[in-house]
Image (cartoon, rainbow, N blue to C red; front, side, top):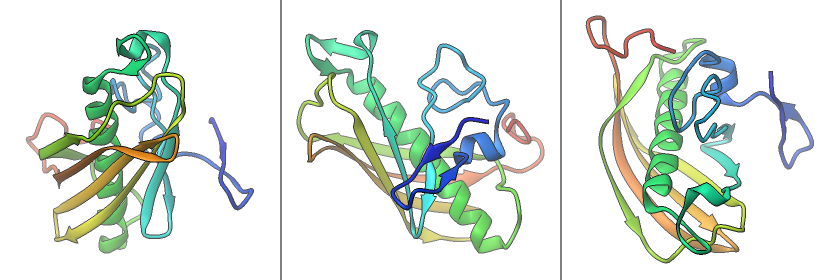
Length: 163
């Protein structure tokens, strides 16, 4: 199981590695060898991640593709929702959550040659859904923001028990 060292110096598995190691999600699935393989970590009231773009993620020379930015924010926000819904319910594994809606604002170009940082927080949590706000930064500047609603799915939904 891959580990990441957080600022505290502790090595921890990502939320994806802990709860969805067989996921093939393009954005965050550990089992997708050609996906982005985003790894998110609970850090107090936030969920955080870092990710390094590659040449094939570019929109135009030197800049990260907006669709990749949207995917990173969507997946990261989804894991923030799953984590916080799990905490609110007092359960040991998160329910599979899906995106009900989300909106991304691209504020400025994101350089391709710099690590990006993602941070997400819960705005509201109810029994089966959470509203999340997230941001993507690079080189010390916020490059994109996102707000979305993420819902824990029930039996009968195609994503139910897919993690």
